[in-house]
Length: 283
Image 1: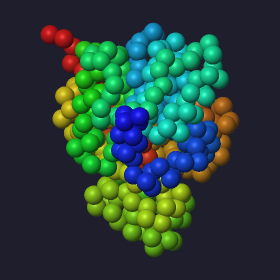
Image 2 (image 1 turned 30 degrees about the vertical axis):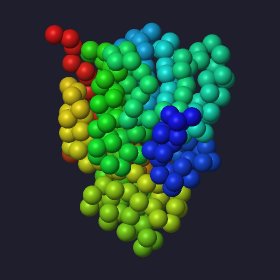
Image 3 (image 1 turned 90 degrees about the horizontal axis):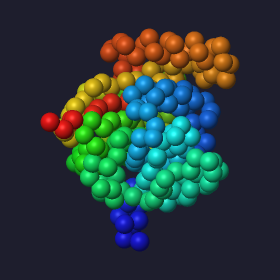
């Protein structure tokens, strides 16, 4: 019970309220989030070792990525600070009895209940933006480094510093003076706050400048490889989101995303950034 409370307390009350409906289990299935889902899967496949590698999904939410990887033959363990997400992940795991998750528990990204050098891959797809203090983000990264085997891979996601202003331009949120204030602070220091708790404006978080994400990963002892744009600028287009169900158009969109990921000047235009790094091999 103490461990569960410690993990739960790492989330602010407004974050708990934001996720209380369980919407995260369905979020990636519609709108521009479909781009996030398929591009994340594509980028993970590009780097991940073949099954049956051991994957630790830290902040894995309701298990969308964990269950997908389990179906590919990986041994996947999920940890999340939110008990609701852990319960949803258990339900998702039970729904695929031929490929269940190997472990599901409430936990804190800053203090993982896992032995040193015992996993091949760590996913940090949520903690680095919900841990708003830099010291806490570094703790989570150090924990990921600790449990990885030599040569193991880290996938760490940040939200781009420029996401709010771009989303405001895309959806007309800048007509709201309260949203303009959110944008001003995001651009100033990356600290995203939504005092009116408007669900369309996200919740308390830290938004990285692309270089900041790279620096934090390097400071945690990793051999940094690169930061990739997950959606790139595709998420800004209503046309892309509306036509993503069309297989022919979707393949064109994804091809363009691969081309655009090569251009460093466009990195901050992606809503989500994926840092790829490795733990140094044993000497």
